[in-house]
Length: 158
Image 1 (cartoon, one colour):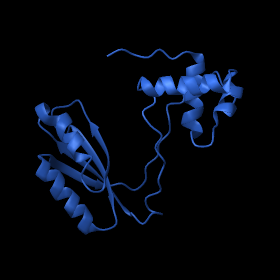
Image 2: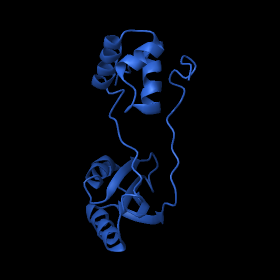
Image 3: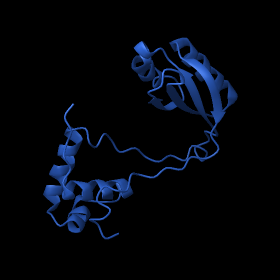
Image 4: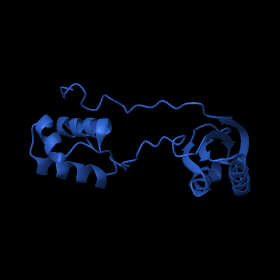
């Protein structure tokens, strides 16, 4: 798998997109990274095509959307089918995130949201039906995230 080499302009673009992809126009980004807006657009397109930028996901407040149960399932999948099961888990109702871990046990983390316990029970049964062994499930109280801020943070005057 080849890697895409980010130069300083790419790093500055990625940094600004991570901060606020929705409200940063190519013209605004261009002004900050000191290139033309068309260059910014081309760079973004190249990074998307190369898989560096995989998408633009909104940050949803599930509680305000009346999805008050937020759970993390710690599961074990057979190593031979781990990736396949992880992909299938994404199709289970309520699942919003699946992470594969390197370890042999407890090697899949499934994050799910729902409005009620009935939906969570359905999600649990579907995950089990896929062949994921649920080791534990925990209620998520709060999630704190931030983007990796070393993409061009030293190149941009924030």
